[in-house]
Length: 313
Length: 307
Image (cartoon, rainbow over all chains, first blue to last red):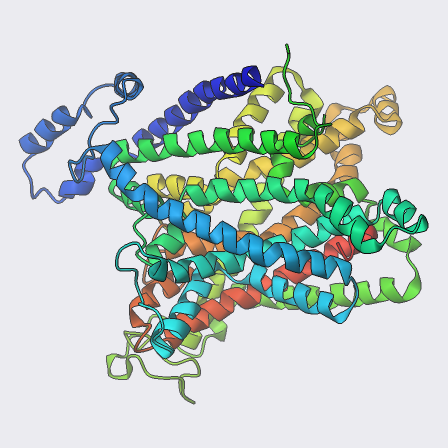
């Protein structure tokens, strides 16, 4: 088990190198750097100052040198300072993380609470009115872009009913409510469908008929076997959602002025703030590897028949 | 065991497996019993016609718009919906109905173009990998792993940001991150077909590789790929609008639904209709294409129905 975990964590290294190199290369190909974004290209600032600043940030060096320097520093725990704000990248990043974590936890909780019971209900009542209504709702939810949902909620809850503040003022449960609802609406619609499909697929298996023939109550079969086995599919999907939520939902965070990593990434990308973008990319790669690892471990816990891919144990 | 079976791609799309597994090809409808087959066909025609109308509308949007979508009329700025301006006007007094119609070109037409391109490119790469195998296969599939690993929109944002915004660059960004999904499907389909008798027969008969692939292999594997791309149109439309919403897509004054909504954010208290009409336009178009995609899937794969 430990061997397996270590083996998987070692995979992080090639992923990290590959992905940071890719993003490094992409940003350099772009042609404009943080300096042109900072001073504009109208010639308001003399060329000497621009060159001096470039040299200070090391942007005049060859591409590979820049990358190796950055990699070496990162391995020593130094992510550098932001080109734009001049603040320490690690500190900036750490200050944005709690907001994103809070939003992730809340919206996943809301999604699980809404979509799993409703999905199971729809599967059990297949072909009846409840099923059609739930499927209709999830279809509508699937076709609504989340920024539209956000604006609708804003209009309804803040402007019409004046229940909630329009934009978040700091990180509190109250201001987290609208972004959470927006994310939960979109994700629940998606998962309701998936839960329904997973439960239906399981319900059609022979053992269900067998249990029924032997007189086992259908409720018992449903709770003890069907739901338990269909959760495997659901957990995989949820894990992927957690992964992308931890990356920050750029659109939702910027609509609600929620000060998380997604909004930070958009700002960093528009300003070409390389060190900040790199920190974000590293974060995403770490999440990716960890989420996949945790998913596989949960698989193993839920269904011990699934072997972990260990070569020597 | 199951762990090896579920690739990252399967994890990501979830539904892909369901219908590639059950896929029977378009001809499967013949086996279906009358009433249901008929109703699926009726739905197919209905949503197909709606989708074609939307597409035509987007191509001829200039002729359909009652006003010039970029004509400013500051005296009539932020006017509520009325007989003269059915959907009201925005902050510069531009007619919202005309802007929503004009925006369909950037949204609907571009999305269809995007989906067509990634389907073609992804399929070709996938078939090449599956057929040729060896080193090129390994390299291309590792690349596609990296793309599939990251949450799509984050990557698209980065690419669009690097390329410097603009609708064209947003489309390139989305294309760059979306092709691997198609390559994966095409590759697995090709691998499944490679050793079949009809392809071997064709090879023995002396057909060129080109002929084997394009005349024999492709028609047999294209079904699931096309279904996937039909189901993807709605998502792509939302992602493209999302990029524009973030300011990484269409730039003002180009009428595009996502950027129109982004622009309307500050008018939420005074003129909410400016945000609602493009939003409703995205919603309705995505819904039409989603319904069409679902129907095509049902038509091609009767067993996936109700799932």
